[in-house]
Image (cartoon, rainbow, N blue to C red):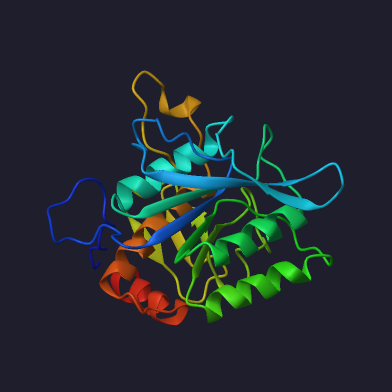
Length: 245
């Protein structure tokens, strides 16, 4: 059986791809830039629904749940030189509305994103055509969207199930630096569902799920795009297939 290639993981010597020059937008609960696993060097914004029912943008992207920070920490470990940008759409509960998600994705397309990490998922719904349109616009613009399947999802999970998005599921049997690519699978990538370890916190009490598998893939794609700055979704998928298939 062929040994699978490991994804980039942790510190690396000069000249080895680390996501340099690639902006990765993290759509989540915000990020704490002062966390030791993030180490500053991050900007962001908040996308939210106001009392008037409209979607607005604000300056505060402070993470109040820790989820987005844990996602950013994984991406930073895989692509330590990537330019991370946080878009906060969760506040308290890890839940939002389709219009806020659409607003965040629309802003990401304007904010210089090359990779967008969407560690979230929802069921198929008839009222989200704008989301599919935005995903298509991203693909046409050379922006790679990486989304996790809903935890426990056996079928459709949006936006991970869209053809214009790289869908990811976690597999607890895989090592933290292992990625498996299955070209014809609705969720084509498999990776570890665990975040980075925290001193004094048992692994079982930390976050866990498809979200962290997606973060590994986003960081890996950022490293690939450093090597191939003009890469499209199609060429990124081909690189994933060759290295991890």
